[in-house]
Amino acid sequence: MAEAFNDDAVNALAVLRGLMANADSEYIRFHAACTILDRAGYGKGHQRAVIDTGNFTVTIDLGD
Image (cartoon, rainbow, N blue to C red; front, side):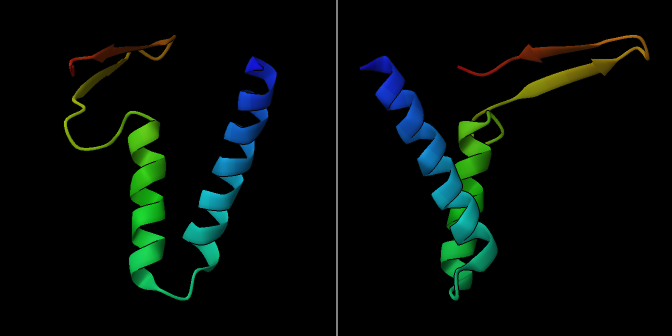
């Protein structure tokens, strides 16, 4: 069952990417992009601090 959900998630991301790149409506492209960013942790309400030392990157999630 979990594998089926993983497959669905991959397909859903492909649909969102397709909408973001190819939808006729700017509104649809915008919301597809916002949805992808939100799911990646860059949406409204997510605060992140990123420290790049050159050798490795530490990301601290300050949200939720």
